[in-house]
Length: 314
Image 1: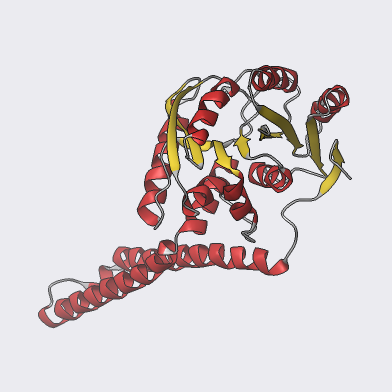
Image 2 (image 1 turned 45 degrees about the horizontal axis):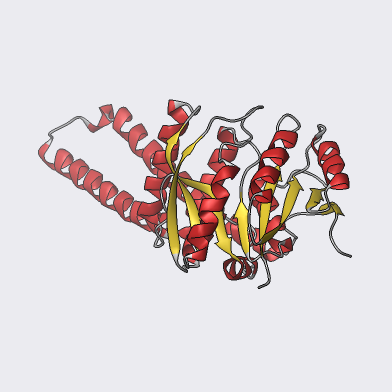
């Protein structure tokens, strides 16, 4: 019986403090697998520290390690996408380099895959070492996303998951640029299983997802999986018309029955003007986000640019 193959996709961005330990723990875990071959694909997402140098040293001594190095930083989702395009395994594991998602869980996830599950996504029971602000914003994001989206995206999940090759082939066939992968893995369907685990503290270094990148990811998720925000623009417009009619009726009644001195209504006028201006600007912002995504797709630029590849067959 021919051995099955598992592929690991590990994006790395300024991970010189983590790279060696990540490789060590992943390697130890994979070496213990019976009846499995494996490959480890590291994606250097434009790191300017010693991350690539360390990975090259590892790959020189271990031909099962493959490296994709970008010409600059293109982002976590682009790095994972690049790895998924190159995998050759029957089962594919996406895992971050910081070791918050323990690679020692991979054997158990493979058992769930062997039982017939095609997407085994990591669901966090606890999240050690993360601030109350991070936990709160994550909860708000998933509640908002599921309220707006037609596809339910599991809460307390990240990109850590094991998926069948046919699922990856489906994901790779999707042409969109601003990919929100954890959403796409839910959208494509297949038999899914929630694998609960305790997320650990980061092994070393600092998070590569500051507030700015978290907001970008949230924006990609909401816009990629919902058109309800743009419908909300119409609702705001209707609401604004109703408010303006109420103000007009109030002004007419006040004038007819002399209930108020309209010449003293500077405050109400300014409130009305700023309110409607805010509604208009908010509407333009929502529409521009969708138009911006259309523009990105229309340009047809690649999602990333590869500078070099190591240990891949020519």
